[in-house]
Image (cartoon, rainbow, N blue to C red; front, side, top):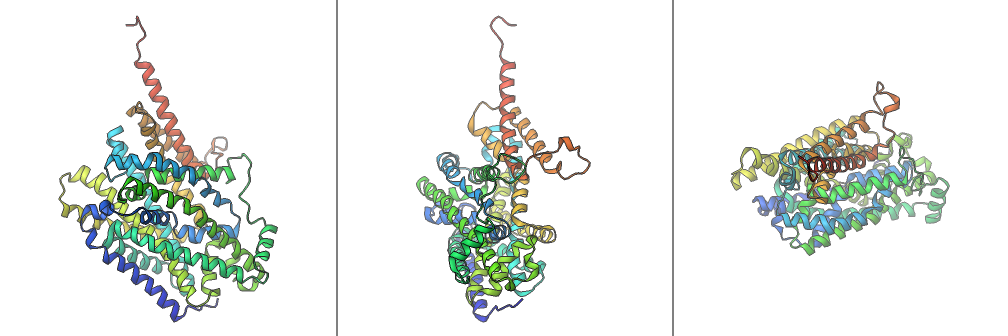
Length: 503
């Protein structure tokens, strides 16, 4: 493979690293308090929080895995984005006002008020577990381009990028994350547009040839519209996307902190609409890049190394194109864009996880009267610990992950544990009893485990294996919790009722 990472590319990449760390240093003073570190002192404009929400949606999973999926298959995963407008409306109408009225920084403190301490612990644990998996996946994907680019051992690249991101999160807290997200989103969009244009210009027949090649191979397909639930059909991905968006806007701490960081309800609403709706055309751009890559290497088959023609390595194709086909300077910009997509997400996950550990663990059970100094020290220590753990997860993933997008979505459905269902139980009715919520969660977790392990364990009876696609794990787990919780509450009410004339 011919590398051409020039001095100009090095300057662009180094300049990006310097700018990112500079943002962390600049906002260090504003993150010296707990309020500053966790909610940016609640005074940020809506447009800034909106770009940050968009940045939270767009990670290296989007930047690399979306093109990789479109290159190897089609646009079926794009259906994930199509349910965003409805979920965004629900987030603006109910979720955001609920959290801003509550005044709690933790997204899960109200669950304790509603159902008891077990509910708060359960939801917090699910969030932390989800973030560990997500950060590990993002860090792994962030390391891929440098591994392809310079031939460095992937493990050392993971270590380097994790250290850099952890330092940034440690210094600046959520206020630096939000400002960096805005900067990084602009870099990412600019880099993606530049790459899409260069891909089209690199085809001898231009856009017409791209459309012709893609049409012959059905590369723009959104998947089957059949009603089978065992495959990633249009409807399966759409439903999975809707549940995931509701979970993001409703129970994801990293989003909730952005609601609190906005200066008013109006600015918070504006940020949700901005972040949610802009993601749709941006994700379409990533899938277009994947389709354009397929057309480009179909027109120039000699330009693609044989190793990268393997569908199992589709996540590497975009980095390969970046380091072998782009002009000097643009390569550095695209590598910086990949870091832009990932570092903000990782730093956001680290700071939100530290916030949950502070409010739902340290202050709740170990030191309720913690001073400001003790609390900020705890936040910084847990941020570093989270960085180390994410590094370990990313190193483990580098040896087992084959397709990043499918793996990420599957693990997200499992690790979330159906906590959206518990939140919805408390939101839709004040009549839901504690016992109903607890039994609903137990039933939901049992269903999630069944859907996860039954298709893969050879000793599991064939007749009782889950026939549903793994993307539906989150959906079915959520529905189970809501239905069982409601049913137990109704049954308890009927047993408690004494008819007239009864004893």
